[in-house]
Length: 191
Image 1: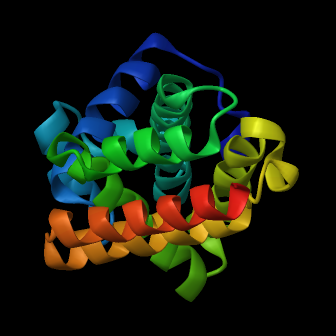
Image 2: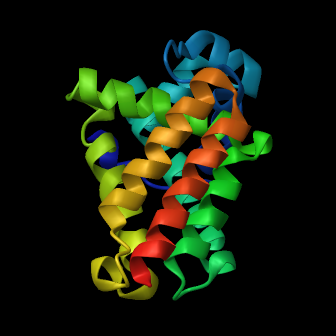
């Protein structure tokens, strides 16, 4: 049976959720089955049986993280307003800058970087898919690129750059000021 053809099971779903909580704390970069299995109350053999391979487990963990990421971004966008690009970007940034979300964002950066440096294996396509996901969400706001100078690609570049800066430096004040400067320029261009 191929990895992606494994039948769903309650035990598999339970262990995936536990493994997800584990990687939020410990990361994916150096994931090893033995410590993971011990931490989540399983064994490497059971994990391999349920997921088929370590690569498939990583793909499933990335998929699980993607579900959380997209749900959070949608909530932030909706909180900002479905038709107000600047408010939606501001609300999204508010979610990104919240220290409670740091573990998911660090996991995202790890997976993004591995997808670029190791384009095969379980990371394949992660970076491209996340760019498409975020662009899609930003394009839905206020008519996308035609919405008063609101360019989803520029908004995405701003958010990603500010996020990487924040994760590297911890300087939320400076990164937030950059986001606000962009939103101010956007408002001035729309006048």
